Image (cartoon, rainbow, N blue to C red; front, side, top):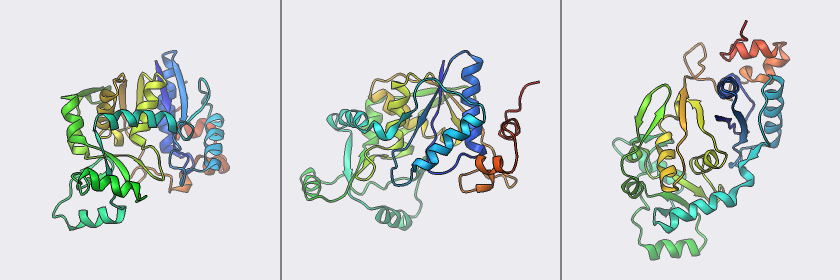
Length: 280
């Protein structure tokens, strides 16, 4: 068994992410397996080295250890680009020139905009652009993103499912995810592309993560199938909630491990707050 914890260094480690880390770590250690650490830092504009340093420091202080070197996604862009070429050669991607502002305006003007795991679905504005026009705009240097042609992808993969330890057999619903972004000019790979590739190349057998990512797993199963990659086992665990029933986030600095540590809490006390009290 191999599990992983893959934080993004866009903020400090907090109780919610510690719950996910402990969940994966304990599952691997109880089974005599491997626990690996991956830093998902493809968003170079928001990911900061000081956050990564503090995350590693907090994990070690909490008593978590990992096997092998830490993998950083920012150092693997060439690998992701190779997989992106597979989709390009299969005619499964198309360039999108819409700005975020333009997409938001079009969504706002729609009577009802369907939502996917990444928010409101892209309305498909650039999906049917003539190739000559798209090629001209790319050659002229106009910024663009590459999107997955989801209906073609679903047509190639056929019906898919994945197994989740909590939810059982889950049917993949790719069309409800829309034409997801695979890369942008400022971000050469997307979360969905990178995590799918890395889980396979790091031989992760059990993916444990929050239930808020259950819907996104449909995207990952589709990409796994298109790339002929193995499908791991999944366990989408519950989320830690605050007193108001809202999920904990990096914005709540009082729940940051560094802040709790400064307040005098011990590693055992923080592990207990994160849902993993020490066994008697």
